[in-house]
Image (cartoon, rainbow, N blue to C red; front, side, top):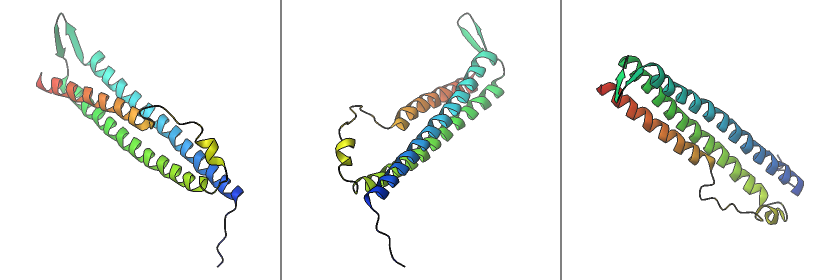
Length: 150
């Protein structure tokens, strides 16, 4: 079987394919993470609005068992969101690496791509979203400890 040598236009098509694929995975990651974080925040709001009573300077947990279970579910959602971010980051970077291989075979495209270099300290969005999820997980852990001890 003869091997087919790719031409410049074929490399360009593959480059666009892998870039579009990475963009699609990133959009899916944002959508999934937004829903999971939104549900976890809603669960946290449910705990503080329904299961906790505030009087003067005291906080009373009305149904600690339900509140604790909600904290466990919220913690699970945060951990699951970390796995979603990790998996999406793996797919995105894999597609970026494949597109870089194609990029090296396309004449003069590197001048266009390297014309702009981001000055952001953290370029990958999954780190930023991961920080938000870590903060939310921390709140669930603190809430769960408070609910369990009181």
